[in-house]
Length: 236
Image (tube, rainbow, N blue to C red; front, top):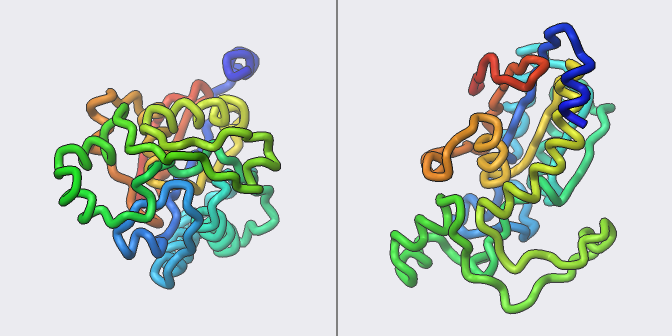
């Protein structure tokens, strides 16, 4: 689909892709693993979302669609941002494919405590590397929100690579075609899911992704040509 659209568009249409990691969550504040656990924003996180929206409003960026995960910290951030933009009428699509990486049996555990238990090197691999899989849950959760969308087997845990693989079909089917047609797109998601998308967009190596960090509530703006080449990247 993407290749066909590129072929059909002769002129060099430019579009903006904006990525925002949700504002600070209670898990961020408490330094614990979350993954697919559904935790709220802190007051600081709510303020970060407002500031992100104000920055985008000041930049005068108009969007045609918003994409977010099925977790409240991203959904609430997205709603606040579009309110600040005066674009609350925009369609917002929620998809499990933009969910945070599933941290398996690590979820709910304090990150410093896991370093004491497993060692700093092992925890660094689980958190930052592309292929390391965290300790798995003994059994999957059964959350109604996912079963409604036909996801019969929730993950027991995921590497960043696994999150990358489940995210890309959504990029190809839902985001890239709109950008090719010159429509600005807003993606509000999570640290790891956005790292996975950034890896793809910037063609970062499996080793190089270790050093990529995405801050809470900091908009990243990509200006892209009609072939989805990055013309400019700006952190606001």
